[in-house]
Image (cartoon, rainbow, N blue to C red):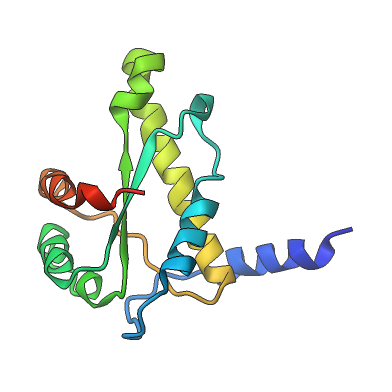
Length: 148
């Protein structure tokens, strides 16, 4: 039986908090890739994976994300910011008008999975839900090369 692993998972869920103070230590690309790989395992409508991840480590982009997120300064201070993008176009090809809802659900499930995975690895995180959608979408066009 995998009781220890289950307990670790339950502990991560119980212990997870929104942390807004971060160490300046960068997260390695291997660790970021591992977190994103785990986020990809989240449930997905029709297994379309109708969400994308944009990894941001550049200070200037983080400053712009901070401005687009009602000036929440901790965003700029985080060593890495991962923007979860609901890929409505991808989901709508199969699900038409309902695709928007499914893409949002896919992104949300991936965020939750990543936050719990990060907690289980001892990495602090914070879900940011207050932001200017259009400003973040414009920034996404700039950093789209980093989409995972």
